[in-house]
Length: 97
Image (cartoon, rainbow, N blue to C red; front, top):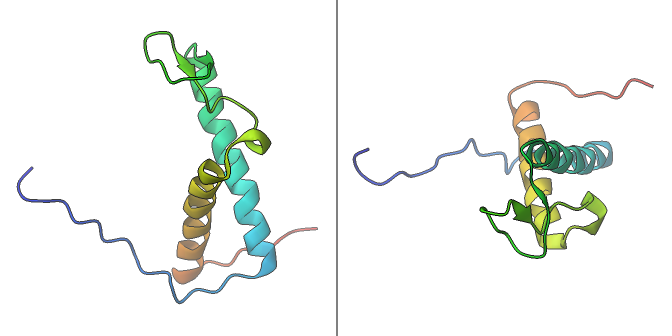
């Protein structure tokens, strides 16, 4: 690869989200963690107080509710940006009751 990679995500700063979309982002963030954790567990990883690739232990193999806020924020930002991008691209998101 030549040169330095410069990320250029689509600007979604002009997209405002409703409270319902914000709640959806939180649900997506939790599910994102659950999918990640399931993949790790299926690969033989277990909870451990420190990350150890050899022993396959990871300190974040805990329920979403027990994650540090910094980790939850990472998943929240990813989920919210994905939802904002969908809205920016013209998709509609609606809850079916």
